[in-house]
Length: 173
Image 1 (cartoon, one colour):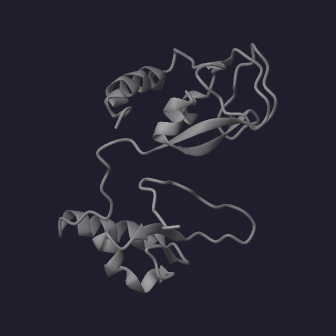
Image 2 (cartoon, helix red, strand yellow):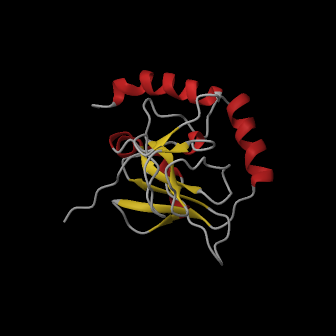
């Protein structure tokens, strides 16, 4: 079976003994991957680039210098949405429950591809605060626009609606 890389995948790792680090998955077809060859782990065609440390006090200023003085961005946005952080219930939720703030007891974030999140009507993490539960939701289930109603009082809800309308052109891409 031939290996293939998925473009735009976002993932993370947390837990005991996991130090802050930088990592990415790449393929030989990406020019920057060759320049970072000393960081590769594995022969490819898809491979991981791993740096076992993360020195933000140095990396942020160096990125700014490269961008401003040399005109070389370290990161460039994709021309379409690729990832979404959605809300997942931490505990069983019941109709009528009003959700608390992120980091409390009701929900947590979960990374998905943008297409999967859109197709499953998953609620973005940023809209979960003060959302009202419409249907029973079991712990571990995703919050969706079908089982929760976001709070219309927040400006972020209105902004997100406009973003979703604008991004709908990418739904079939």
